[in-house]
Structure formats: C-alpha cells, structure tokens
Length: 345
Picture 1 (cartoon, helix red, strand yellow):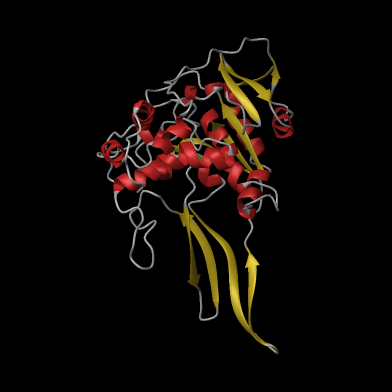
Picture 2 (tube, rainbow, N blue to C red):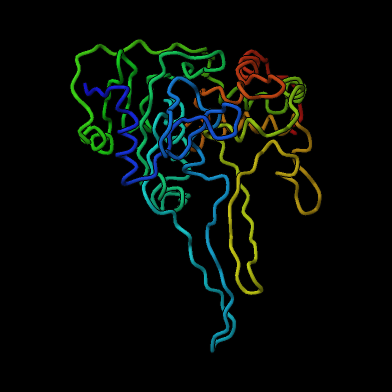
C-alpha cells in the first residue's frame, strides 16, 4: 500500500495544481467557518470536517454558459450562428468523501453516457473525463450520515481514482484507476505495511422493496402531507444534495443580435418549477412536490437509470432549517400500508 505523510499534503496539492485546477476542503473566506471545496491556492486543508456543499458544482455548475448565438445576414437571408461553449482544462477534487465520489457515478448514469446512448450532456462529460477524484475514507461519522444503508457504505470506491485512508502520521493510498496511479507516481508517496483503519459505521435505513412501495403509496396524500408538514419548500436539500440535478435554461441577449444560452440550478421543491404557461401547476402543494422528490430519488430514477439518486451523505438532514429527516420519511413509507380506494393524484 502506498503512503503519504500528512505534512506532504500541501506539497501534493501544489504539484497537482501545476497541471490542473485543484479543489480541496477549506474554510471559505468570510463564511463563518463554513468548509467548502475551494480552489487550492495554499493555506490550510480541512480534512477532519465534512464540506457543507458537495462537489456537484464541479461537474454541474450552479450557473454555466452552454452556447453563444448571433443573427447574421447572408446572401440567403438571415441565419443564426451557434457556437458551443465547452469547459477546458483538468480538475482534481481532493478530499471528497465516498458519498461524494459515488454521487458522480449516479449522475453519470444520466449525463455521462456516450453519444448515441440516450441522453448525453457534452459539458458534463467533458468535465468528468478531465477530472481526478481523490477520496478520503471516513473513520468517523456524525448523526446525519446514513451511507451504510448502501452495500459498501463508507468503503464505496466507485467514482474515485485514489482512495486515502487516515492512519498514524498520514494516509495510506490505494490507486483505483490510471489517474490515481499517476498521482501516486509524483514522488511524494512511499510504501507502508500499516493495516487499514476501521471505517465508520453510519445509520442505516431499509431500502429493499422501497422502489415499489413508493409507487404503491403514490396516491396516499394523507401520508405525503404528514411527511412534509414541516417543509417550507426552501430548496436547501436539493442544492446541497450531491445527486439532485434539476436545472433551468434561459437565453440572455448581449446586444440586439447576439446572445448566450445558459443553464442554472433549479429545484423541484420550488412552487414555480412545474407551473405551466397556462398558470396550472400539476404539483400545487408542498406535499405534491415532496412526493415527487422522494419518488424520483428512490423509485423513478433507479427504475430508469439503475442507480438510486441518493448516497446517504446526510446534507439534506444536516442543513434543513426545520429538521426534516429523509430517513424518517423513508422508514415511515416502508411501514405504510397502501390505502384502498385512493384516486391517483
């Protein structure tokens, strides 16, 4: 097993930053001690605290320009010229957790397919193809974590290129891909025979049969109203979630004949998200919207993409302003008996 001393981590990040943009957990400036994935420019790395936001915006930015367009007059009349805006350069995510790295493979199931394989998002795929993910194994967890609900829990390695285990004096390093091998070949890693540490054991919820159970109680609005009665529809859970990907697309003119098409995050918990041009909203209440959020993550998406749209990171629990706990909702859903005679909403 490879080994890197703790004191060499800043040097490692400096070396990686020579050829890529490096993102590492740090206290964000003027943030009241909030830890985020910040662009590495030196300083202290926070390896003992969980980032408030995930690394999602490094592959699916909160706002990004997709293309530019310009109306031009030609001999054949007016035409529009369109030019895609593609991301450039390599990125390294250092200090992601197993739930963050796994979330990337969950998003890959929708955005990262090869051209011709259903939906393909060129901007997303370009970022993923040029990204190296260095994951830090969790040896401790807090009360909001529930990644152990999945098969591998904190030992999940999908989405990671290099897996780091905290041990005395530094980190054991396990390369998982050629990108990971390239990192350990930088000359800062030695060999070690230290044993692997015991990883954290987090809260666990029952997922077996949940996909079908959610469909069976789809029309039970009594259940969904009680489940969401505390929710204020603020959207924090969707923005903090490493797998939520709802977005809006808008055009903005830079002049009378030139403009940009951009994408920005949106949230299924917002009232206007499904409001139609007629004014009708098929999800008029918080209960309807929360039902869709839970159903999408645990039933619809796994049915279509084969991945559960959740990795148990606990951010939606940790940061919810009213203390709504998705684990309690899912447990209640498992225990709920389908109500006979309910009309479909």
